[in-house]
Image 1 (cartoon, helix red, strand yellow):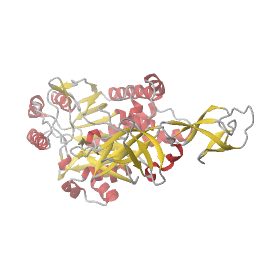
Image 2 (image 1 turned 180 degrees about the vertical axis):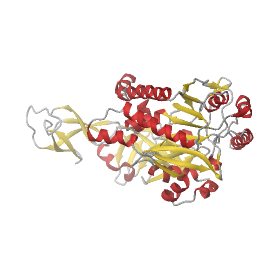
Image 3 (image 1 turned 90 degrees about the vertical axis):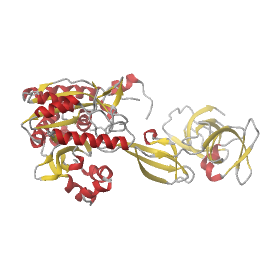
Image 4 (image 1 turned 120 degrees about the horizontal axis):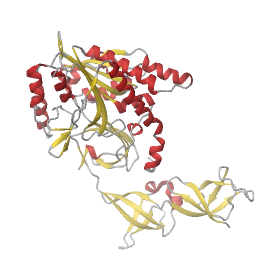
Length: 309
Length: 188
């Protein structure tokens, strides 16, 4: 990449940074109009969730949050029905054309709602974002907006693996090649003619999602893809404290075996689950990624003011 | 050894006992999934390309590479001879390592020679060398446009495109990385 001064880079980014500001406003207006409360939860936390492949960045005896999920669920358990948050999250070692170690996540949660309700929210949010952020010029511009406001495709993970990888997804999980297949064969086909949702993940990849009632091998989890880019990850949330504690323990054990730090299990989050988290759905959406898709750029560096060197 | 997180474009690594340079690099990771470090590699000796993905836990070999500043001496007909200016050691570099750079080698120029396990595999010339134009059609006097070019030859027969105002006998600068004309140094 040619050396450019900081000032030149910032000047060239004006269009994308302006779009970013409009997107932030759009997100806030969207959720306010639907009676969601914006909450700000701590960025520096003592107990990040144990997940197999998400590493938190240490910060003076604690950690920078990789997601606000556990704190937001504590707020839900206290009786707040609809909440959202936009803010910085941090993941160790994640740097590439689609990854920043410090990035912006939007999360929202609804009680008495499932992952299908969250899908409806997401579809409407992205349509609103395209209408507010994009200033369509000519036929191409109008088609670009229509792409985001139009219908979405919904495909099970199982079907996607059959169609694009000629593989059985459960076999891939058993063989440890799920991520390779997903990245090499499946993702490059997703979301080109319309935004595409990959739904119902193998239960072992549920993370914090609940199992699908009647389908114990599947988790209520979906991911949104736009032009091959992963944009958002949604769950019918796991509310069972026993199963949650067991999953954290398994991930912690996996991390230790892998030579990585296991995190302490968050006692306040567990107490909230034990007190009773109502049935709920939630989602994490990468704001930088959504901007990449809206602005049609290939590098995440282009949508932030100060990409790390 | 390198860790997967050290991988980046331009890094030189060793795989199955062979040296490779990373020509393209990307980091891929499903949000909840494993990191995949995707590399396009070029074999540093035979130039063949391949793709390879690494995982976080992978340890990747460091090739035994050494760079030495050396002076080009002469062409002995079979190979190109370079000399270490401090030890006066001479080394022979095969023509296939030099390739088209042979046109820009001049006695006494300082080069960087890259050795893999003590074997010279790459020679880097100064970014610019000067050469005299020995053959070109006369250009229009006063024509200072640089976007219109004509063919020209330097002493050893290498052909470059030069602007119309460059004449036979002029001294020009050539960029050894691209093999192209850069600017005129002096007029004949």
